[in-house]
Amino acid sequence: METQEKKSIIESLLFVTGEPLTLPVIKNITGLHEAEIRQVLDDLIREYREKNRGVLIIEIANGYQMVTNPANAQWVKKLRNTSASSRLSMPALETLAIIAYNQPIIKAELELIRGVNSDGVIKTLLDRRLIKIMGRKEVPGKPLLYGTTREFLQYFGLKDLSELPTLKELTREEAA
Image (cartoon, rainbow, N blue to C red; front, side):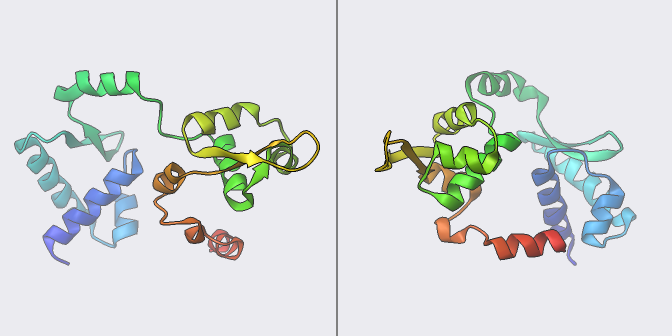
């Protein structure tokens, strides 16, 4: 494997994890020797610092992590203060999955599946534009129908709903 490929792989791992990665974890994933990994990380750390990039790689908590450049702290703080967190809570993910696989769905059906009140989670998902009101169900009370949005597809990197994993695929992944 070429040095540039090693750098690219390790850089990708650091980028997606969001937490410190230890040498043994990187070794387990890549199959590279720890000495090779350490050399690649040293090179990446130096390259990011020399180019004064917006992100840096640092050694922290017995591992390595990609972090924002402290020189940009004031702008990062502004962003954090103005935008809602992009992470979804477990109840929000659960609710979103139920809506995605059962849309259009009314709140009562959703709560029957979840077993808990979903008012707050639905409001959050509506505010984040991950779900939308698709109309009303033609039953007494005419409850609102919910479905996913284009933003939902973007958030999860899907072209369309047909790309959602099937129950069979999810079961197979859990067994692996």
